[in-house]
Length: 314
Length: 115
Image (cartoon, rainbow over all chains, first blue to last red; front, top):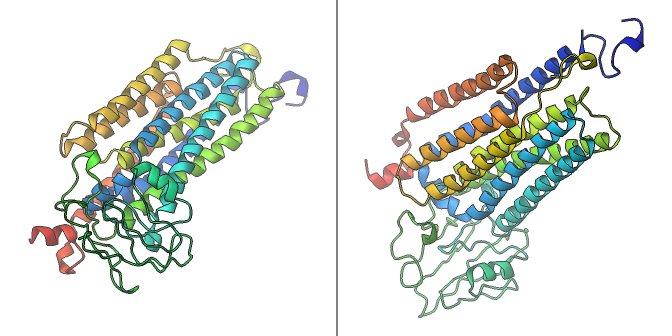
């Protein structure tokens, strides 16, 4: 290969022709995707093990996930896969404008996915639904440790008064009792005191840090009549089993790693958009678009499995 | 397939496959959520996973172009899935052999069943 005039600019010297280079690149990407499947597979294995051994944790904790948001995210990613595949087709057919539009739409969908993820995560963080020691006990209504700014949205969600974060313990007409908590979600000390009065039979008292922090579900008119596994999505989480933080550890690890992959994909798609503007991709050379497309479809594929396993537990 | 100086033209996925796959995925997503309203007991998770497998197959075949690709790419993909299956299968077989009642107080479901 002495003269540079007799081969395309993108053809690297160790390849015979463009087709061989393209096929090799594609195989390389598929091998990488194989490693991605096995990496996420490790987390899926953790899920399988823990769910097989402690189904009660999953039955309890999945109520704290919003199925609707998860379904919307699934649809968003499916649409992004369509726009990405369409973009690859546009590159192959030399439709530069359409390629740019499709890449931008894919980026938009990815941003929408991360936006919904942000909403979900901030809700969980504000309620102390975290991993390991950071998990804060929830009462029967799923109200947990008092984070900084969740009072309004939580009241709006459940349409009931909620203990304000200014040190006042309040029992509303549902008998929602606050619990003594030496570490709030943000690490600041909240002087919440357990409220006990004649009208609220449900009492949650946590005396010291060594006592178990998981309160029993209140029984009586305002609580659940008897702790039982919830078959109906509207029935609520029920009584918390031991170690509910296991679910959230798995949830954040799996969706977090997936979210990092979405972010990485957004960076690479942005790079593709820049290249597309410069006219770098066309019928002769569209390999980067094709390969990023493959990566993006794997990201979608992983979410297709994450969604039913995390959000649709019954 | 990109060709040298246009010897081969790239196979662009026809629009009907792209749109058809997208529509099927949306329908299957709706079905996945709808099926959770029906109580099938232990079967629920398998139905959900089954639908997810169908969706994954559609994505792999049409969006990821495996239907028209060289078969070796499919072998890599399916091979990774098979090894993942082995991984999870052996881990599950192992964990189900555990005897949790040897350490009292660490198996809530056992205590509830008072076995």
